Amino acid sequence: MAVFMILLTGKVGKIITTLILVILLITGGVGYFAWYNFKREVPIVYKSAEDHFKYGSINSGGVPFFIWEVLPELFAKHLPGPGGYKSLGFIWEEGKEMPVGVSKSIVGFPRQGSTCALCHSTTYRKTPEDAPTLVLGAPTQTFDSIANIRFLAACGNDPKFTPDNIIPAIEAKHQLSWSDKLLYRYVIIPDTQKKLMGLGLGFAWTKSRPDPGPGRIPSFNPVKFINFRLPLDDTIDNVDDPAIWNERKHKGFDYHWDGLETSLTETVIMGALAAGTKPDNVPLENLQRVEDFIRLIPPPDYPFDIDPVLVSQGKPIFDNNCASCHAFGGDRTGTIIPVEEVGTDDHRIEMWTQAAVDKYLAVGDGQEWDFTQVHKRDGYVAVALDGIWLRAPYLHNGSVPSLKELLEVPSDRTPVFYRGYDVYDQDQVGFISEGPQAQKEGFEYDTHLPGNSNQGHLYGTELSTEDKQALVEYLKTL
Ligand code: HEC
Ligand code: HEC
Image 1 (cartoon, rainbow, N blue to C red):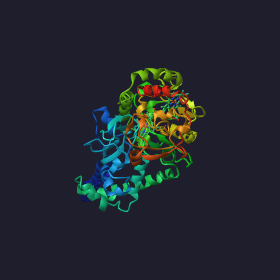
Image 2 (image 1 turned 60 degrees about the vertical axis):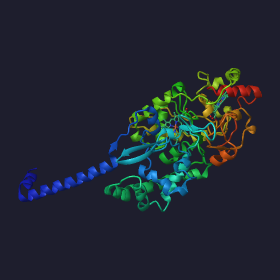
Image 3 (image 1 turned 135 degrees about the vertical axis):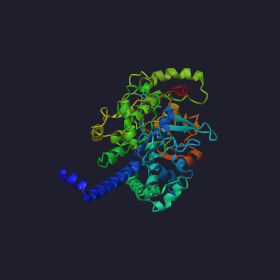
Image 4 (image 1 turned 180 degrees about the vertical axis):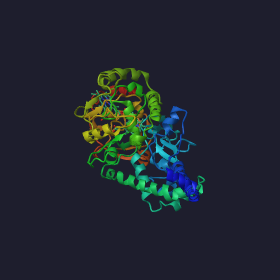
C-alpha cells in the first residue's frame, strides 16, 4: 500500500494514476457497452392475460427479432408457399407486429421467441369465405413446427445469409445506428447463422421418421436427443397438440398424452423448456400468469345449431358407454388406460423412457423450481372431452379426422386424409379433411406410416346408426 501511495504522489504517480483511470474507463465502457447491447432487459408487459398468453415472453430464446422479420422475404424459396410465416401455419392477427405465439423481448437487442399460444391456439372457419375465429387454448390446426424449424435451418445454411444481404433488409424497416450495424455485422448475424445451422443438425434425426405435419410435433425426442444428449434411438414421438383450456376442472388428472406428469405447474414449466427456455432462466411469474389463464379459459361453444332432442337422447348413451372414462367425476377420467386395453398406436409410449425420466428429475436441481412428478407410464390418459368438437383430428397421434369416424371400426376409418385446413365440417364433426381444398392447403396424413396408426379405441363402434348420431350430437355440447 505504501509503495502504491508513493507512486500516486510523485510525477510518475500522476502518469500511472491517469493510465489506471483511462484503463478503468475503457474496460468500464466496454463492460457497459456489452451489457447495454447484449444483457440490458427492458420488460414488455401485457396488461391483459390474453395478450400475455399470445405474445408475452417466456424467455424461450429464438432468432434476433429484426433478422427473424426479414427471413421470409430474403429466403422465400425455403418456405412451403407464398404468404411469409403464414405459409408455415402461423396465425397472424390483423395489424399486429408478430403472429400469435411469437414474443418480442428486449435483452440488449430485440429478440423473437415462442409462447405457449404457438401450439395451443387455433383458428376455425365456418365456411371457406368466413373470417377465421381465433380460439386460445385450443390445439393448433395449422402451425407446422417441424416445417418452421426446417425453414430456419435452411436460411442459416443458405450462402445468402450474409450481413450484406441482411442489414439492408433490416434497414428498410428499422433505423440502425452505426454501432448497431457493427454489432449485427460482426456479432449478431454470424452468431445467429451458427445457431440456425446447429438447429438443423439438432433436428436431423426427424428426417428418418414420418413428418408430423401441421398441428403435430415430435414431442419429447427433441429434449431427449438435443437437451439431454441421450443416445439416438429409433422411437417415433409425433403427437397431436392438445387443448389446455379449463384446467381448473382437470385438477388431479395426469398430464400429457401418456400421463408422464401429474402437476400442472411442472407441466407448464415443461412447456416452456420445450419452447426453448433455459432451466436457469425460467420466468416463474410470467408462467404463473399463463397457468392462471389456462385454468380459467372455458372451452368454446359449438358454433353451429345443435338439435336438443338428439342431445337428450345422446346423453344416456354417453353415460353408459363413455362417462366412466371421459366425464368429469368418472372413475377413470384423467387416469391412464393401459395401451393393451385402449389399443391405440403405441409408439408414443415406447418413446418415453426411464432414462428420460431420470434426466428430467435432475433438470431443476439448484433452481428455484423443481420437477418431482415425472413418471414412466404404459398407457394413454382418458382425457376429459371438454370442447372436443374443436380438438380434431382425434387420438394422441391425431389419426382419426372426425368424431363420426372415431365411432366406426378402424377398417372403416379414412386411411389417408389431409390435416391443416381450418374449415369446419359440421357433418362429420371435425375439420374438412378430404376434397380439393383440404388437399391443396393440408398435409397428407397416411395412417399406414409408423406412429400414424388409427387402430384401437373401439368404444361406441357397435352402437346403432341412430345411437351414434345422438351421441355425436351430445358430444357437441361438451
Ligand atoms: C411447440 C409446441 C408447444 C409449445 C410451444 C408448448 N406446448 Fe404444451 N404441449 C404441446 C404438446 C405436443 C403436448 C403433448 C405432448 C405429449 O404428451 O407428447 C403439450 C402438452 C401440454 C400440457 C398438458 C395437457 C394435458 O391435458 O395433458 C399443458 C398443460 C401444456 N402443454 C401447457 C403449455 C404451456 C403453458 C406452454 C408455454 C409455457 C406450452 N405448453 C408450450 C405442445 C406445445
Ligand atoms: C376405458 C376407457 C374409455 C372409454 C370407455 C372410452 N374412451 Fe375415449 N379415450 C380413452 C383413452 C385412453 C383415450 C386416449 C387414447 C389415445 O389418445 O391414444 C380416449 C380418447 C378419446 C377421444 C379423443 C380425445 C382427443 O383429444 O383426441 C374421444 C373423442 C373419445 N375418446 C370419445 C369416446 C367416446 C365417445 C366414448 C364412448 C362411446 C369413449 N371415448 C369411451 C378411453 C376411453
